[in-house]
Structures are given as C-alpha cells and as structure tokens.
Amino acid sequence: MIKFRGWLILLLSIICYIGARAFGSYEFLLLSITFLITFLYSLFSTIQLRDKLFIKRKIGHKRVHVDNVVDVNLHAKNKGTLFTSIPIIKDKLPSYFGDSHNFVVPTNFYKKDFDIKYKLNMDKRGLYKIGPITMRGQDSFNLTQSNVLFDDYQEILVYPKTYDISQFSPGGVGFIGYEALTSDLVSPIGDDFYSLREYVSGDDLRKIHWKSTAKTSALMIRKVDDATISRVAIIVDGFRDSHLGEGKESTFEYLVSAAATIVNYFAKSNYRVRIVVSGNRLYVIPFDDASRNYHRIMEVFAKCEPSGNISPTIIISKELDSLPTGSNIVFLTTSFNTNWLDKLKRIRRRGQMRIALVLVVGETFLPMSDVLYQQKMTMFSEFLAKIYGSGISVCLLRKGCNIKSTLEGIKRNRVK
Image (tube, rainbow, N blue to C red; front, side, top):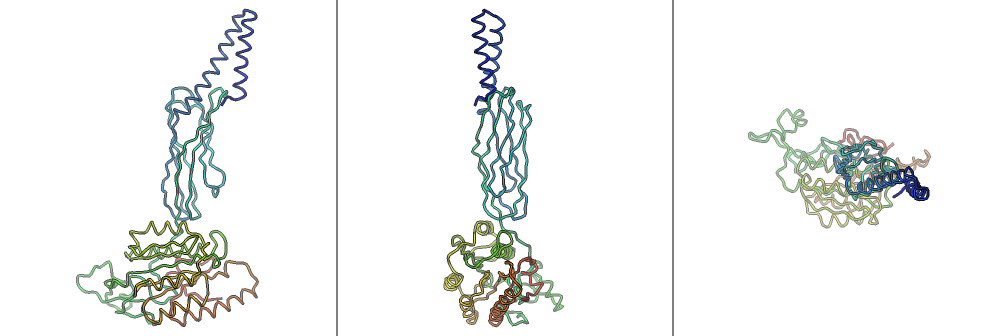
C-alpha cells in the first residue's frame, strides 16, 4: 500500500520530469530520477517483505491448569536482502484477554532473526484460540506499507484448578479410595468405606498405610485386590437451574474444581473412573483407567458449562440403572432436591453401591439478608439431616472454603 508521502514523492518525480523537458534542465531530470528510484526502492522493499518474512508462534504448554502462566514466543525471520522496517507485529488473542498484543520491533531489521516473548495468565478454565499473527511493515523512508497475515492458529486448553489431596473423606466418614471398601477393617462411624489388612511378608512396602499403622501398632496394608472396589463413577450436576454466582466464585466452578481434584486422587491409584457431566452437552466417558484417561477427562472439565437441561434426578436414574453392582459413586451438585436423594437412598439401602456426595451450599454465593439466609439454612439443615440419616457421606463446600482440606475431611462441615 502506497502511503500519502509515497504518492507525494511519485508526484514530485513526475513534476521534475516535466520541468526537465520543459526547461531542458539536467538538475530537474536528476531530481526526477532520484525521486523515482526512491519510490521504486520503497515499493519493492515492502513487496518483497510479504514473501521474505517468516513468523512462527511457539507456546510453552498447550494444556495447563487454572492460575498457571503460559509463555508465548514469536520467532521472526527475515529472508530478504533489503533494509526493511517492521514497526508492529500483532498476535490476536481471545476477547477474554482484552486487546491483542501489539509489539514494536527495532527499525534496523536487516537479515536478522529475533524473538518476541510475552506471557498469558490463565486464570479461567476453557479452550482458547490464539491467532492469526498480523504484521505491518514499511520501508525505511516510510513511503509504502505492507500488511501481512500469517494464518498461525493455536489452542490452549485450561484445566480447572486441582489440589493434591492425600485422602478423600467426605464429612469425615471413612475414606473413599484405596484405603476403602471391602471390610477387613470397618469404619467406626458405621460406613464400610474402609478396607485395610495386616502386613504379610512380601507385600509392597509402598502400600503401607502409616496412619492406621500408628493407631494399631501393627503394619497395615491398603487392600486393593478386589476388582469391584476400584471402579468409581463421578457425576457432576451441570443443570442450568442448579447453579449460582459468576466466574471463579460460582457454584459450578467449585464443583468442577472438586471433581478434577477427586479424579486426580483416583488417578494416582489407577482406579477405573467413569465421568458424567450434564453441562452444555451431556459428556460421558466410560469406565477406564483414570491415569491413562486423565487428559481426556480434564478436557471435559475444561469445556463444560452449567447450561444443561437434564435435571440431576434424571441423571441419577439413568446412571443407577447402568452402573455395575459394587461401583462407587461420587455425586457433585448444588441441588438439595429430595427426588434424587430418594433414589440414592434406595440404592444405599440395597447395599449395591457406596455413595459419597459433594454438595456446594449455593446460598453462600449470593448476597442476601440475614433473615433470608437463616431461612434458607433452616431448609438446608433439614435436607442435610435426611442425608446423614441415610448413611451417605457428604462433603459441604461453601464460598471461600479451602477445597483441599474440605475434601480431605480435615474440617467437619457444619451449617451455620
């Protein structure tokens, strides 16, 4: 593209040429040639820029967790032989990050490579598409300009924030996981979420459960030889009418973070995990080794949104009809509806499945008067009493709580 200054130089060349012919002036002819050569040099340098400049983006990590920082590097290479000025390179970013990154580069760009580096703070889960790269170059006299588009697109998948938990103990009622289940050792609270046995010569020392060893004064081993105890279905309620709050401080973000943390916990023990999320679409991942399927599961958690049209009652009904006997269930929701609870209680009474509930207290995510809050908490307390009466383990998450310690059962949850 020829700029105004370029047209002016071209016009002066023509005027000087006319003057040289009219007055027979050698000086005017020399000026005309000088202006024309300058214009042609500028035009050629920007035209060859389109074919001689190469820019490539490199992203440090394309899969990260919330609150991580992604390093981005733009590598530019000039294959041309003429002096070229490239004042601005722009890397288009998703609207979430605000304006695209514009970079001013040195004007003495002559047969050189250079790198432009910047960072992205990934503080929201999701799938982000970066690109294209655009470059605006001009000649050294600023007479012409060239805009070049590089179709370089890359995606960054941001997983929810996860925590490294040493145990999953909802409501303090035993453990769910490799410490749990078949009943060599039964939880003193009456739930059969606990399975250990005494050490036998030749056992893997890495399976020693040190906390139980300290309590019993005998070496205790985590028992994992029963195939039925290593299967866990994790169900996340993404029903649009179930969730409150916005952004990171929303009930759904707490649920997804808790679900990802629980999956991470089971992945360390090679559990077979089934994932069901009733979000913007119904996501279902069949039973498979959690460690082998980890990134596929996290991709679901990164993309899902709380806009589902399937109620938790329907989801629970379908899952309970399809899950094999002996499966463990972890249900994460904000709904305190007796319909789905009644279905879980019937299964619990039959003793076919072991059930844990992660319940986000939605009322803590909205501003409300003390009177209304107390009314809501009274209703919630009545619902919670039904859960405790059914023998289902429950973990309560509130706005601002420590998700890690709450899932580990370090702090017992009590309704205010």
